Length: 172
Image (cartoon, rainbow, N blue to C red):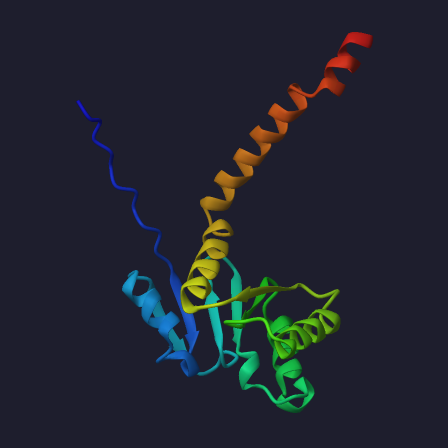
């Protein structure tokens, strides 16, 4: 007889989205997964905020920017975003990696090197949604506790089975 498996409940959360993304495909994909979506004019344009996990994502399209990033106000927008959100991610939407995309990525990395901004290059809307949900789920309770417990068990197992520890035990 085949064992009956319970379907794994899909993780659902609340997401605050900038009203500038109200008609964006990523918003439609999140709604289709039945996440609770709230729109706000008071967040940085292009932002997705996951309040239960304390993460925020800023979606940027390099192809919409002028040749020089400074002229677009992008760096100021990113700076404001990083100042507001302590756990911030930049979703750099680039379906292909051309010279302009690499220059923008390099400039953002150079400018925000010592900040808490993490950059996640994405190629399509599915990657945008998957990346945000993976990070938000991994940093939300109770998932973060489960991950922490698993990491502790793995660390303990590695230490116990380490030849170095065996050698030290034998010498003592």
